[in-house]
Length: 168
Image 1 (tube, rainbow, N blue to C red):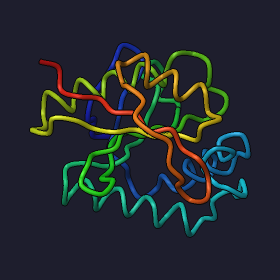
Image 2 (image 1 turned 180 degrees about the vertical axis):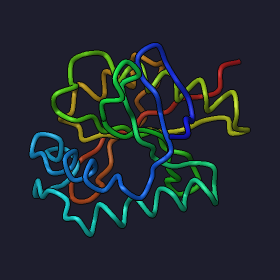
Image 3 (image 1 turned 90 degrees about the vertical axis):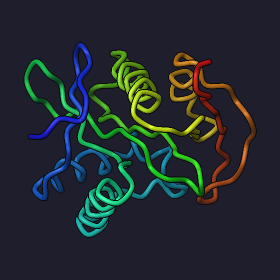
Image 4 (image 1 turned 180 degrees about the horizontal axis):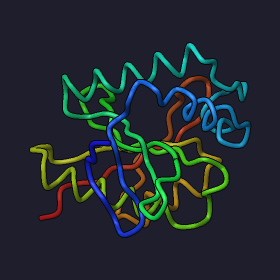
């Protein structure tokens, strides 16, 4: 598969059409969905296929998108990560499969994405946001230097917004 970037333990790859099953396993887990859907609903096959297509289109058209995240040592599917457009601002995002939580993978890929963004993009900032109860995700964004800005509702849930500015 084609790689976008690599870290010590992870590789961010472009999606292929056969990744729907991986997205179903990721977003079919109630723990993963707890902070992503107000009702905690898991993804259907149709939604997984649609989101996969949207991320592929976003990459082709904007050079941004969520990508397939795998472990370098064995190619195991870890989750998804990357940037999307949120209004007029790039937004960092990541979702890891439940069995990979607590191993530092989210921080590792978030830092690599931040470095990649400022090395390859002209933008002066990007944002991130997560449910206010998702303290682990807030901690990840704080670890890579993001600063809290405000709380706002998205999809019927309160979200903490954070910003990362280009280093001077």
